[in-house]
Length: 233
Image (cartoon, rainbow, N blue to C red; front, side, top):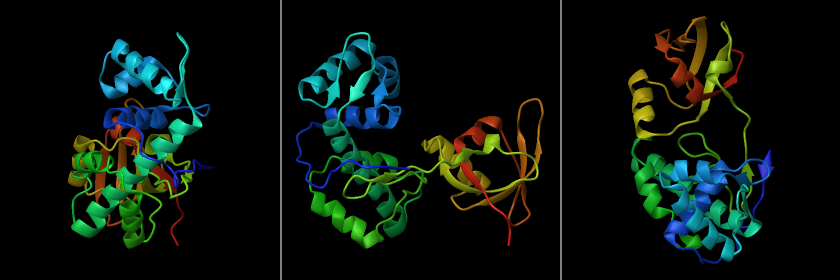
């Protein structure tokens, strides 16, 4: 599935705080581009009144549609800005990992700062150096220069059955704590697993890596790992 928001001609017109709100709205929005105030405030760790106040400001600028007691709807203008921010953030993360040898658990906070740089030329050059990657180090899709973003329909590992073979393709959670947990297990994007056993009570999984090493993964970890089935050659 590809969503398109034309960002190539986008002009810088939002503060860093406004950009953070638009980015969160973009990531939280359903297929109708709608988000509840409570979900937004929870995602940003702010109170509902604080979120409401900012949403009203975004509405005045034409970036969202706000109606009291109704979900927030992100407009095309708002989506344009959000897609640009996400592109900058995810390109930065990829550059830090691929060209500067940062760990995937180290890059988020740096990208949070870099995403507010205005220059589109800077990020176009970064994209060129990287060879126009379509995903970031955590498997999340990177919008291209025109705002097209390909959404993959990967499934959580927890939905897979005993005996299936899968490849890790993305994450539902890219927090530092979870990434460090995966590092300890030596699990990364592209890792191939065979599901040996699923506990009927707590859904803990016993999996086998390609090298034969067996691991026990808790149910919470299994819901956060996104996978695609594969058949060995």
